[in-house]
Amino acid sequence: MQFPKLGGKGVEHKDRTDADAPSDSNSVDVAAEQKVTFAACFLGLVASIGGFMFGYVSGQISGFFLMEDFMERFGEPQNGTYIFSAARQGTIVGLLCIGCLIGALTAGKLADTLGRRLTISLFAFFSCIGIVIEISSTNKWYQFAIGRLVNGVGIGALSVVVPMYQSESTPAIIRGVIVSTYQLFITLGIWLAEIVNFATHNKVGSASWRIPNGLGFAWALILGAGILLLPESPRYAFRQGREDEARRNIAKLAGVEPNAMSVNAQIDDIRAKVAEESAGADTSIWEIFTGPRMLYRTILGVVLQAGQQLTGANFFFYFGTTVFSATGLSDSYVTQLILGSVNVACTFGGLVVVKKSGRRMALIVGALWMMMCFFVYAFVGHFALDQNNPQNTPTAGTVLVAFSCLFIAGFATTWGPLVWAVVAELYPARYRAPAMALATASNWLWNFLMSFFTRYITDAIDYLYGLVFAGCCAALAVIVFFFVIESKDRTLEEIDTMYVQHVNPITSAKWRGEARKTHHNESSSEAEKAEATV
Image 1 (cartoon, rainbow, N blue to C red):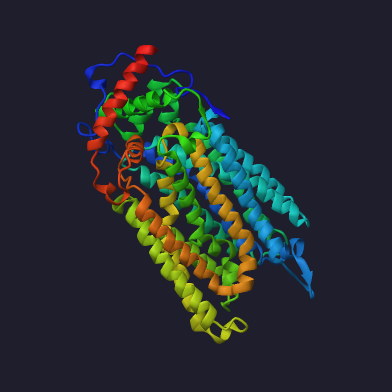
Image 2 (image 1 turned 90 degrees about the horizontal axis):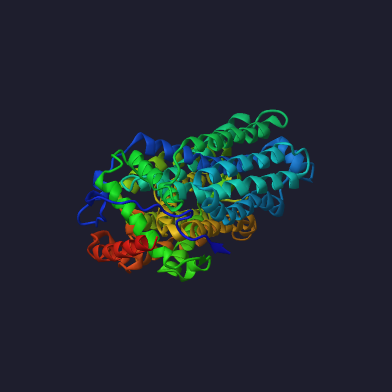
Protein backbone atom coordinates (compact mmCIF):
# COMPACT_ATOMS: atom_id res chain seq x y z
CA MET A 1 0.00 0.00 0.00
CA GLN A 2 1.28 3.46 -0.89
CA PHE A 3 0.27 6.85 0.44
CA PRO A 4 -0.31 9.59 -2.12
CA LYS A 5 2.28 12.32 -2.24
CA LEU A 6 1.70 14.86 0.45
CA GLY A 7 -0.18 17.92 -0.59
CA GLY A 8 -2.74 15.82 -2.45
CA LYS A 9 -3.66 17.92 -5.43
CA GLY A 10 -0.72 20.20 -4.80
CA VAL A 11 -0.45 22.73 -2.00
CA GLU A 12 -0.94 26.26 -3.24
CA HIS A 13 1.95 28.52 -2.20
CA LYS A 14 1.15 32.21 -2.29
CA ASP A 15 3.33 35.28 -2.14
CA ARG A 16 3.61 36.16 1.52
CA THR A 17 3.96 39.48 3.30
CA ASP A 18 6.08 39.96 6.40
CA ALA A 19 3.00 39.14 8.44
CA ASP A 20 2.93 35.74 6.79
CA ALA A 21 6.54 34.93 7.51
CA PRO A 22 7.32 31.82 9.51
CA SER A 23 7.05 32.38 13.21
CA ASP A 24 8.54 30.42 16.04
CA SER A 25 7.19 29.66 19.47
CA ASN A 26 9.21 32.48 21.02
CA SER A 27 7.43 35.17 18.97
CA VAL A 28 3.89 33.82 18.73
CA ASP A 29 2.01 32.15 21.57
CA VAL A 30 -0.62 30.41 19.49
CA ALA A 31 -2.78 29.26 22.40
CA ALA A 32 -2.78 32.73 23.99
CA GLU A 33 -4.39 34.35 20.94
CA GLN A 34 -7.04 31.67 20.48
CA LYS A 35 -10.53 31.85 21.95
CA VAL A 36 -13.06 29.27 23.05
CA THR A 37 -15.64 29.57 20.27
CA PHE A 38 -19.15 28.24 19.72
CA ALA A 39 -18.05 26.90 16.33
CA ALA A 40 -15.30 24.72 17.85
CA CYS A 41 -17.53 23.48 20.66
CA PHE A 42 -20.38 22.69 18.27
CA LEU A 43 -18.00 20.79 15.97
CA GLY A 44 -16.75 18.76 18.92
CA LEU A 45 -20.24 17.94 20.18
CA VAL A 46 -21.69 16.90 16.82
CA ALA A 47 -18.69 14.72 15.96
CA SER A 48 -18.81 13.12 19.42
CA ILE A 49 -22.17 11.55 18.58
CA GLY A 50 -19.95 8.82 17.14
CA GLY A 51 -18.90 8.09 20.72
CA PHE A 52 -22.53 8.22 21.85
CA MET A 53 -23.38 5.50 19.32
CA PHE A 54 -20.68 3.23 20.74
CA GLY A 55 -21.71 3.89 24.32
CA TYR A 56 -25.36 3.26 23.57
CA VAL A 57 -24.84 -0.10 21.86
CA SER A 58 -22.37 -1.17 24.59
CA GLY A 59 -24.59 -0.12 27.49
CA GLN A 60 -27.73 -1.87 26.28
CA ILE A 61 -26.38 -5.40 25.84
CA SER A 62 -25.77 -6.12 29.53
CA GLY A 63 -29.44 -5.56 30.31
CA PHE A 64 -30.70 -7.60 27.36
CA PHE A 65 -29.33 -10.83 28.81
CA LEU A 66 -31.77 -10.65 31.75
CA MET A 67 -34.86 -9.69 29.69
CA GLU A 68 -37.35 -12.55 29.53
CA ASP A 69 -38.25 -12.26 25.84
CA PHE A 70 -34.61 -11.90 24.79
CA MET A 71 -33.66 -14.99 26.82
CA GLU A 72 -36.49 -17.07 25.33
CA ARG A 73 -35.59 -16.07 21.77
CA PHE A 74 -31.81 -16.29 21.88
CA GLY A 75 -30.91 -18.23 25.03
CA GLU A 76 -30.49 -21.97 25.60
CA PRO A 77 -33.18 -24.00 27.41
CA GLN A 78 -32.10 -25.56 30.69
CA ASN A 79 -34.37 -27.11 33.35
CA GLY A 80 -37.45 -25.23 32.23
CA THR A 81 -35.74 -21.86 31.94
CA TYR A 82 -33.32 -20.14 29.58
CA ILE A 83 -29.67 -19.26 30.06
CA PHE A 84 -26.77 -17.91 28.03
CA SER A 85 -23.67 -20.08 27.98
CA ALA A 86 -20.30 -18.39 28.26
CA ALA A 87 -19.66 -19.09 24.56
CA ARG A 88 -22.96 -17.68 23.32
CA GLN A 89 -22.92 -14.64 25.58
CA GLY A 90 -19.27 -13.96 24.75
CA THR A 91 -19.94 -14.23 21.01
CA ILE A 92 -22.92 -11.86 21.09
CA VAL A 93 -20.99 -9.30 23.11
CA GLY A 94 -17.66 -9.82 21.37
CA LEU A 95 -18.70 -9.69 17.71
CA LEU A 96 -19.39 -5.98 18.09
CA CYS A 97 -15.71 -5.55 18.93
CA ILE A 98 -14.60 -7.66 15.97
CA GLY A 99 -16.64 -5.40 13.71
CA CYS A 100 -15.11 -2.37 15.37
CA LEU A 101 -11.64 -3.81 14.80
CA ILE A 102 -12.39 -4.20 11.07
CA GLY A 103 -13.83 -0.70 10.88
CA ALA A 104 -10.87 0.83 12.68
CA LEU A 105 -8.36 -0.78 10.31
CA THR A 106 -10.21 0.37 7.18
CA ALA A 107 -11.11 3.89 8.29
CA GLY A 108 -7.69 5.51 8.00
CA LYS A 109 -7.30 5.04 4.25
CA LEU A 110 -10.84 6.25 3.56
CA ALA A 111 -10.32 9.29 5.79
CA ASP A 112 -7.27 10.26 3.71
CA THR A 113 -9.15 9.64 0.46
CA LEU A 114 -12.65 11.01 1.10
CA GLY A 115 -11.85 13.48 3.83
CA ARG A 116 -12.75 13.37 7.51
CA ARG A 117 -16.35 14.58 7.24
CA LEU A 118 -17.50 12.31 4.40
CA THR A 119 -15.92 9.28 6.04
CA ILE A 120 -17.73 9.99 9.30
CA SER A 121 -21.04 10.41 7.46
CA LEU A 122 -20.54 7.21 5.44
CA PHE A 123 -19.85 5.00 8.44
CA ALA A 124 -22.62 6.56 10.54
CA PHE A 125 -25.15 5.51 7.90
CA PHE A 126 -23.43 2.13 7.48
CA SER A 127 -24.07 1.28 11.13
CA CYS A 128 -27.82 1.50 10.43
CA ILE A 129 -27.55 -1.71 8.40
CA GLY A 130 -26.38 -3.57 11.48
CA ILE A 131 -29.26 -2.19 13.56
CA VAL A 132 -31.74 -3.45 10.94
CA ILE A 133 -30.22 -6.95 11.13
CA GLU A 134 -30.40 -6.92 14.94
CA ILE A 135 -33.94 -5.61 15.28
CA SER A 136 -35.30 -8.02 12.63
CA SER A 137 -33.92 -11.07 14.47
CA THR A 138 -36.67 -13.43 15.62
CA ASN A 139 -35.15 -16.55 17.17
CA LYS A 140 -31.69 -16.92 15.64
CA TRP A 141 -29.11 -15.68 18.11
CA TYR A 142 -26.40 -15.63 15.46
CA GLN A 143 -28.43 -13.18 13.33
CA PHE A 144 -28.48 -10.76 16.26
CA ALA A 145 -24.74 -11.31 16.74
CA ILE A 146 -24.03 -10.66 13.04
CA GLY A 147 -26.03 -7.45 13.29
CA ARG A 148 -23.74 -6.33 16.09
CA LEU A 149 -20.74 -7.25 13.91
CA VAL A 150 -21.99 -5.03 11.06
CA ASN A 151 -22.94 -2.23 13.43
CA GLY A 152 -19.46 -2.51 14.91
CA VAL A 153 -17.77 -1.83 11.57
CA GLY A 154 -19.37 1.60 11.49
CA ILE A 155 -18.70 2.35 15.15
CA GLY A 156 -15.07 1.21 14.94
CA ALA A 157 -14.40 3.45 11.96
CA LEU A 158 -15.94 6.40 13.81
CA SER A 159 -13.69 5.71 16.79
CA VAL A 160 -10.69 6.46 14.54
CA VAL A 161 -11.96 9.32 12.40
CA VAL A 162 -13.91 11.31 15.01
CA PRO A 163 -10.96 11.97 17.39
CA MET A 164 -8.75 12.56 14.34
CA TYR A 165 -11.18 15.14 12.96
CA GLN A 166 -11.57 16.83 16.35
CA SER A 167 -7.83 17.02 17.04
CA GLU A 168 -7.02 18.40 13.57
CA SER A 169 -9.80 20.99 13.62
CA THR A 170 -10.03 22.49 17.09
CA PRO A 171 -7.64 25.13 18.52
CA ALA A 172 -4.91 24.01 20.91
CA ILE A 173 -6.43 25.92 23.81
CA ILE A 174 -9.39 23.51 24.00
CA ARG A 175 -8.25 20.56 21.87
CA GLY A 176 -7.85 18.21 24.84
CA VAL A 177 -11.31 19.04 26.16
CA ILE A 178 -12.96 18.71 22.74
CA VAL A 179 -11.38 15.33 21.96
CA SER A 180 -12.31 14.17 25.46
CA THR A 181 -15.98 14.89 24.73
CA TYR A 182 -15.82 11.74 22.60
CA GLN A 183 -15.45 9.74 25.83
CA LEU A 184 -18.08 11.91 27.55
CA PHE A 185 -20.54 10.99 24.84
CA ILE A 186 -19.63 7.31 25.22
CA THR A 187 -20.63 7.57 28.88
CA LEU A 188 -23.82 9.46 28.00
CA GLY A 189 -24.68 6.72 25.51
CA ILE A 190 -24.11 4.00 28.11
CA TRP A 191 -26.20 5.93 30.64
CA LEU A 192 -29.13 6.50 28.28
CA ALA A 193 -29.08 2.82 27.25
CA GLU A 194 -29.30 1.83 30.91
CA ILE A 195 -32.21 4.23 31.48
CA VAL A 196 -34.08 2.86 28.46
CA ASN A 197 -33.37 -0.74 29.54
CA PHE A 198 -34.70 0.05 33.01
CA ALA A 199 -37.84 1.57 31.50
CA THR A 200 -38.56 -1.33 29.12
CA HIS A 201 -37.22 -4.48 30.80
CA ASN A 202 -40.62 -5.41 32.29
CA LYS A 203 -42.53 -4.95 29.03
CA VAL A 204 -44.18 -8.05 27.62
CA GLY A 205 -42.80 -9.38 24.35
CA SER A 206 -39.99 -8.14 22.15
CA ALA A 207 -40.67 -4.46 22.91
CA SER A 208 -38.48 -4.90 25.99
CA TRP A 209 -35.34 -5.10 23.82
CA ARG A 210 -36.47 -3.88 20.39
CA ILE A 211 -37.35 -0.39 21.64
CA PRO A 212 -33.86 0.32 23.05
CA ASN A 213 -32.32 -1.41 20.04
CA GLY A 214 -34.27 0.65 17.51
CA LEU A 215 -33.42 3.98 19.13
CA GLY A 216 -29.89 3.50 17.79
CA PHE A 217 -31.16 4.68 14.39
CA ALA A 218 -31.68 8.20 15.70
CA TRP A 219 -28.07 8.78 16.73
CA ALA A 220 -26.68 7.44 13.45
CA LEU A 221 -28.97 9.63 11.35
CA ILE A 222 -28.19 12.77 13.35
CA LEU A 223 -24.44 12.24 12.99
CA GLY A 224 -24.54 11.18 9.34
CA ALA A 225 -26.42 14.30 8.29
CA GLY A 226 -25.10 16.77 10.87
CA ILE A 227 -21.40 16.22 10.19
CA LEU A 228 -21.86 17.44 6.60
CA LEU A 229 -22.80 20.89 7.91
CA LEU A 230 -19.43 21.31 9.65
CA PRO A 231 -16.12 22.58 8.18
CA GLU A 232 -13.49 20.15 6.92
CA SER A 233 -10.33 19.57 8.95
CA PRO A 234 -7.97 22.49 8.16
CA ARG A 235 -4.98 20.18 7.99
CA TYR A 236 -6.71 17.84 5.55
CA ALA A 237 -7.89 20.80 3.45
CA PHE A 238 -4.34 22.22 3.28
CA ARG A 239 -2.95 18.90 2.09
CA GLN A 240 -5.55 18.85 -0.68
CA GLY A 241 -4.29 22.21 -1.97
CA ARG A 242 -7.08 24.25 -0.35
CA GLU A 243 -4.97 26.67 1.69
CA ASP A 244 -7.58 29.45 1.75
CA GLU A 245 -10.16 27.02 3.14
CA ALA A 246 -7.68 25.80 5.74
CA ARG A 247 -6.91 29.37 6.80
CA ARG A 248 -10.61 30.28 7.07
CA ASN A 249 -11.42 27.19 9.10
CA ILE A 250 -8.53 27.70 11.53
CA ALA A 251 -9.58 31.33 12.03
CA LYS A 252 -13.27 30.57 12.44
CA LEU A 253 -12.72 27.78 14.95
CA ALA A 254 -10.21 29.85 16.97
CA GLY A 255 -12.24 33.06 16.92
CA VAL A 256 -9.59 35.19 15.19
CA GLU A 257 -9.12 36.90 11.83
CA PRO A 258 -7.80 34.84 8.88
CA ASN A 259 -4.60 36.93 8.82
CA ALA A 260 -4.02 36.83 12.57
CA MET A 261 -0.46 35.99 13.63
CA SER A 262 -1.56 32.74 15.28
CA VAL A 263 -3.23 31.61 12.04
CA ASN A 264 -0.14 32.54 10.03
CA ALA A 265 2.03 30.63 12.50
CA GLN A 266 -0.12 27.50 12.20
CA ILE A 267 -0.28 27.68 8.41
CA ASP A 268 3.51 28.05 8.29
CA ASP A 269 3.94 25.14 10.69
CA ILE A 270 1.68 22.97 8.54
CA ARG A 271 3.48 24.10 5.36
CA ALA A 272 6.86 23.33 6.91
CA LYS A 273 5.73 19.87 7.97
CA VAL A 274 4.37 19.20 4.50
CA ALA A 275 7.69 20.30 2.98
CA GLU A 276 9.66 18.02 5.32
CA GLU A 277 7.41 15.08 4.62
CA SER A 278 7.23 15.70 0.86
CA ALA A 279 10.99 15.27 0.67
CA GLY A 280 10.28 11.58 1.21
CA ALA A 281 8.03 11.39 -1.88
CA ASP A 282 5.70 8.37 -1.83
CA THR A 283 5.64 6.63 1.51
CA SER A 284 5.00 3.02 2.41
CA ILE A 285 2.54 2.27 5.17
CA TRP A 286 5.45 0.66 7.01
CA GLU A 287 6.79 4.14 7.71
CA ILE A 288 4.46 4.31 10.70
CA PHE A 289 7.23 2.12 12.15
CA THR A 290 10.27 3.54 10.32
CA GLY A 291 9.48 7.27 10.09
CA PRO A 292 11.02 9.88 12.42
CA ARG A 293 10.47 8.56 15.98
CA MET A 294 7.43 6.69 14.65
CA LEU A 295 8.18 3.23 16.06
CA TYR A 296 8.22 4.77 19.54
CA ARG A 297 4.95 6.61 18.97
CA THR A 298 3.17 3.80 17.15
CA ILE A 299 3.92 1.34 19.94
CA LEU A 300 3.00 3.93 22.57
CA GLY A 301 -0.37 4.59 20.91
CA VAL A 302 -1.11 0.86 20.68
CA VAL A 303 -0.19 0.36 24.35
CA LEU A 304 -2.27 3.31 25.57
CA GLN A 305 -5.37 2.22 23.65
CA ALA A 306 -4.96 -1.38 24.79
CA GLY A 307 -4.38 -0.05 28.29
CA GLN A 308 -7.73 1.73 28.30
CA GLN A 309 -9.35 -1.70 27.98
CA LEU A 310 -6.97 -3.38 30.42
CA THR A 311 -8.00 -0.98 33.17
CA GLY A 312 -11.09 -3.22 33.38
CA ALA A 313 -13.76 -0.55 32.90
CA ASN A 314 -15.74 -2.50 30.31
CA PHE A 315 -15.93 -5.44 32.70
CA PHE A 316 -18.58 -3.41 34.54
CA PHE A 317 -20.28 -2.01 31.45
CA TYR A 318 -20.64 -5.34 29.62
CA PHE A 319 -21.32 -7.65 32.55
CA GLY A 320 -22.37 -5.28 35.33
CA THR A 321 -26.03 -6.32 35.46
CA THR A 322 -25.06 -9.99 35.72
CA VAL A 323 -22.29 -9.32 38.26
CA PHE A 324 -24.47 -7.30 40.60
CA SER A 325 -27.34 -9.76 40.42
CA ALA A 326 -24.84 -12.33 41.76
CA THR A 327 -24.16 -10.16 44.83
CA GLY A 328 -27.76 -10.55 45.97
CA LEU A 329 -28.87 -6.99 45.20
CA SER A 330 -32.61 -6.86 44.62
CA ASP A 331 -32.57 -4.91 41.33
CA SER A 332 -29.34 -5.13 39.38
CA TYR A 333 -30.75 -2.76 36.72
CA VAL A 334 -30.88 -0.01 39.34
CA THR A 335 -27.31 -0.75 40.42
CA GLN A 336 -26.09 -0.61 36.83
CA LEU A 337 -27.92 2.69 36.39
CA ILE A 338 -26.15 4.05 39.47
CA LEU A 339 -22.78 3.09 37.97
CA GLY A 340 -23.76 4.75 34.71
CA SER A 341 -24.75 7.94 36.52
CA VAL A 342 -21.40 8.04 38.34
CA ASN A 343 -19.68 7.50 35.00
CA VAL A 344 -21.44 10.45 33.36
CA ALA A 345 -21.02 12.85 36.29
CA CYS A 346 -17.33 12.09 36.69
CA THR A 347 -16.60 12.34 32.97
CA PHE A 348 -17.77 15.96 33.14
CA GLY A 349 -15.19 16.33 35.90
CA GLY A 350 -12.70 14.69 33.58
CA LEU A 351 -13.04 17.58 31.13
CA VAL A 352 -11.87 19.91 33.90
CA VAL A 353 -8.98 17.56 34.69
CA VAL A 354 -7.92 17.54 31.03
CA LYS A 355 -7.84 21.33 30.94
CA LYS A 356 -6.26 22.03 34.33
CA SER A 357 -3.87 19.23 35.24
CA GLY A 358 -2.37 18.09 31.96
CA ARG A 359 -2.19 14.58 30.53
CA ARG A 360 0.62 12.88 32.43
CA MET A 361 -0.35 13.52 36.03
CA ALA A 362 -4.00 12.68 35.43
CA LEU A 363 -3.16 9.35 33.75
CA ILE A 364 -0.68 8.33 36.45
CA VAL A 365 -2.93 9.20 39.39
CA GLY A 366 -5.93 7.65 37.66
CA ALA A 367 -4.12 4.35 37.07
CA LEU A 368 -3.01 4.12 40.71
CA TRP A 369 -6.52 4.95 41.94
CA MET A 370 -8.10 2.23 39.78
CA MET A 371 -5.45 -0.25 40.95
CA MET A 372 -6.44 0.38 44.57
CA CYS A 373 -10.16 -0.05 43.79
CA PHE A 374 -9.62 -3.39 42.07
CA PHE A 375 -7.53 -4.71 44.94
CA VAL A 376 -10.43 -4.07 47.32
CA TYR A 377 -12.97 -5.41 44.83
CA ALA A 378 -11.03 -8.64 44.30
CA PHE A 379 -10.34 -9.45 47.94
CA VAL A 380 -13.80 -8.53 49.25
CA GLY A 381 -15.54 -10.44 46.46
CA HIS A 382 -13.40 -13.55 46.90
CA PHE A 383 -12.99 -13.71 50.67
CA ALA A 384 -15.93 -11.80 52.20
CA LEU A 385 -18.89 -12.41 49.87
CA ASP A 386 -20.93 -15.57 50.27
CA GLN A 387 -21.21 -16.43 46.59
CA ASN A 388 -23.73 -19.24 47.15
CA ASN A 389 -26.07 -17.12 49.28
CA PRO A 390 -24.99 -13.49 48.83
CA GLN A 391 -27.97 -12.30 50.89
CA ASN A 392 -26.05 -13.57 53.92
CA THR A 393 -23.27 -10.99 53.34
CA PRO A 394 -25.02 -7.70 52.49
CA THR A 395 -22.09 -5.61 53.73
CA ALA A 396 -19.74 -7.27 51.26
CA GLY A 397 -22.18 -6.60 48.43
CA THR A 398 -22.43 -2.95 49.42
CA VAL A 399 -18.62 -2.64 49.50
CA LEU A 400 -18.38 -4.16 46.01
CA VAL A 401 -20.85 -1.63 44.61
CA ALA A 402 -19.15 1.26 46.44
CA PHE A 403 -15.68 0.44 45.13
CA SER A 404 -17.08 -0.21 41.68
CA CYS A 405 -18.42 3.36 41.76
CA LEU A 406 -15.06 4.66 43.00
CA PHE A 407 -13.33 2.80 40.18
CA ILE A 408 -15.70 4.26 37.60
CA ALA A 409 -15.08 7.73 39.04
CA GLY A 410 -11.33 7.27 38.56
CA PHE A 411 -11.68 5.90 35.04
CA ALA A 412 -14.17 8.54 33.91
CA THR A 413 -11.98 11.44 35.01
CA THR A 414 -8.70 10.12 33.60
CA TRP A 415 -8.21 7.09 31.36
CA GLY A 416 -11.66 7.30 29.82
CA PRO A 417 -11.36 10.72 28.14
CA LEU A 418 -7.60 11.27 28.15
CA VAL A 419 -6.47 8.28 26.10
CA TRP A 420 -8.44 9.49 23.08
CA ALA A 421 -6.89 12.95 23.42
CA VAL A 422 -3.31 11.76 23.92
CA VAL A 423 -3.36 9.26 21.04
CA ALA A 424 -4.93 11.81 18.68
CA GLU A 425 -1.98 14.12 19.43
CA LEU A 426 0.83 11.58 19.05
CA TYR A 427 1.38 11.47 15.30
CA PRO A 428 2.35 13.88 12.49
CA ALA A 429 -0.29 14.48 9.84
CA ARG A 430 1.44 12.26 7.24
CA TYR A 431 1.03 9.17 9.41
CA ARG A 432 -1.94 10.17 11.57
CA ALA A 433 -4.66 8.18 9.80
CA PRO A 434 -2.90 4.77 9.60
CA ALA A 435 -1.21 5.14 13.00
CA MET A 436 -4.47 6.08 14.74
CA ALA A 437 -6.22 3.23 12.94
CA LEU A 438 -3.67 0.74 14.28
CA ALA A 439 -3.80 2.16 17.80
CA THR A 440 -7.60 2.16 17.90
CA ALA A 441 -7.65 -1.36 16.46
CA SER A 442 -5.65 -2.50 19.49
CA ASN A 443 -8.38 -1.02 21.70
CA TRP A 444 -11.02 -3.04 19.88
CA LEU A 445 -8.92 -6.20 19.87
CA TRP A 446 -8.56 -6.11 23.65
CA ASN A 447 -12.19 -5.09 23.94
CA PHE A 448 -13.12 -8.30 22.12
CA LEU A 449 -10.76 -10.46 24.17
CA MET A 450 -12.23 -8.99 27.36
CA SER A 451 -15.83 -9.43 26.29
CA PHE A 452 -15.38 -12.98 25.01
CA PHE A 453 -13.19 -14.49 27.72
CA THR A 454 -14.45 -12.68 30.82
CA ARG A 455 -17.19 -15.23 31.52
CA TYR A 456 -14.70 -18.10 31.28
CA ILE A 457 -12.24 -16.35 33.59
CA THR A 458 -14.78 -15.32 36.22
CA ASP A 459 -16.21 -18.85 36.22
CA ALA A 460 -12.70 -20.09 37.07
CA ILE A 461 -11.32 -17.49 39.52
CA ASP A 462 -14.41 -15.38 40.35
CA TYR A 463 -13.64 -11.95 41.83
CA LEU A 464 -9.87 -12.50 41.85
CA TYR A 465 -10.12 -11.46 38.20
CA GLY A 466 -9.83 -7.95 39.63
CA LEU A 467 -6.17 -8.61 40.51
CA VAL A 468 -5.39 -8.93 36.79
CA PHE A 469 -6.75 -5.44 36.17
CA ALA A 470 -4.99 -4.08 39.26
CA GLY A 471 -1.66 -5.30 37.90
CA CYS A 472 -2.38 -3.78 34.49
CA CYS A 473 -3.19 -0.41 36.09
CA ALA A 474 0.11 -0.44 37.98
CA ALA A 475 2.02 -1.16 34.76
CA LEU A 476 0.18 1.63 32.93
CA ALA A 477 1.18 4.19 35.57
CA VAL A 478 4.84 3.27 35.00
CA ILE A 479 4.49 3.43 31.20
CA VAL A 480 2.96 6.91 31.30
CA PHE A 481 5.62 8.19 33.71
CA PHE A 482 8.53 7.15 31.49
CA PHE A 483 7.16 7.45 27.94
CA VAL A 484 4.29 9.96 27.53
CA ILE A 485 5.13 13.61 26.82
CA GLU A 486 3.03 16.39 28.34
CA SER A 487 1.11 17.90 25.40
CA LYS A 488 -1.29 20.27 27.14
CA ASP A 489 -1.91 23.54 25.20
CA ARG A 490 0.58 22.69 22.42
CA THR A 491 -0.06 22.64 18.68
CA LEU A 492 0.04 19.29 16.90
CA GLU A 493 3.15 20.38 15.02
CA GLU A 494 4.90 21.34 18.26
CA ILE A 495 4.06 17.97 19.83
CA ASP A 496 5.54 16.24 16.79
CA THR A 497 8.73 18.26 17.22
CA MET A 498 8.98 17.28 20.89
CA TYR A 499 8.85 13.58 20.07
CA VAL A 500 11.27 13.88 17.14
CA GLN A 501 13.77 15.79 19.31
CA HIS A 502 13.55 13.21 22.12
CA VAL A 503 12.28 15.63 24.76
CA ASN A 504 12.43 13.86 28.13
CA PRO A 505 8.83 12.87 29.06
CA ILE A 506 9.51 13.35 32.79
CA THR A 507 10.48 17.01 32.32
CA SER A 508 8.45 17.69 29.16
CA ALA A 509 5.96 20.00 30.89
CA LYS A 510 8.79 22.54 31.34
CA TRP A 511 9.81 22.49 27.67
CA ARG A 512 9.27 25.95 26.21
CA GLY A 513 10.37 25.48 22.63
CA GLU A 514 14.01 26.56 22.76
CA ALA A 515 14.89 23.55 20.65
CA ARG A 516 11.85 24.11 18.51
CA LYS A 517 13.14 27.44 17.25
CA THR A 518 16.08 25.83 15.46
CA HIS A 519 13.87 23.04 14.19
CA HIS A 520 11.31 25.54 12.92
CA ASN A 521 13.92 27.59 11.10
CA GLU A 522 15.24 24.43 9.45
CA SER A 523 11.69 23.49 8.50
CA SER A 524 11.07 26.96 7.05
CA SER A 525 14.21 26.67 4.92
CA GLU A 526 12.99 23.35 3.58
CA ALA A 527 9.59 24.90 2.88
CA GLU A 528 11.23 27.73 0.94
CA LYS A 529 13.28 25.23 -1.06
CA ALA A 530 10.11 23.31 -1.82
CA GLU A 531 8.43 26.52 -2.99
CA ALA A 532 11.36 27.28 -5.27
CA THR A 533 10.89 23.96 -7.03
CA VAL A 534 7.13 24.31 -7.54
